[in-house]
Image (cartoon, rainbow, N blue to C red; front, top):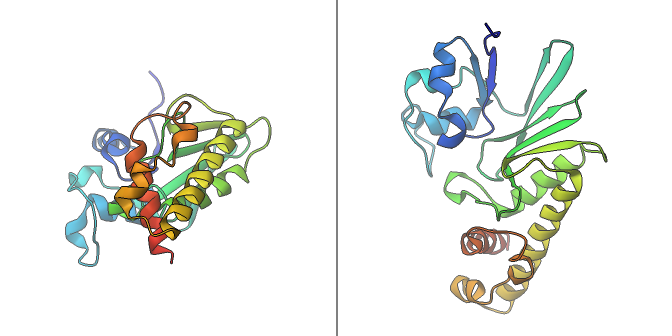
Length: 217
């Protein structure tokens, strides 16, 4: 029989990334995540939490939480889970498999899709841009990058994603500076240059970018 799973690291709180927690925990795995992941999965314990959350079964809650980063030294290798503040959500973690030269970006990276920025869970377009920059700083030409959604990627793919994020933010900021409303910015289609390469909900992405631009003034 295969060895049991010993650790499970959640990259953020959304159900498509934490839905297996309860079963894996019951099988003996230690559930690990950023502190805000536990908060959003168990909001009744916190009176200061606002935004989106869901009530998870007790057995699905992370039992080890961290605020900045946590290192795993396991089977002669190092795994480093690092918090990326206010990006896709407020509890995102990128996971660096140091010796293997692999970087798991979770939903900080949607390969081939426009990102979903969960502003109701503390996400921000500006934080997402900084998270992608931080991820790229950990890579070299041979790094394999695992996105939260989409195919296995290269640093060049992640650089193209960053270029798209920065360019759209600059375009939205320019339109907002001209006095356009959020709806007018959406209608101006600031993602047009990228729509042939990136798919899925450009409007939701643009609205999240607009909120970041307006909030940063």
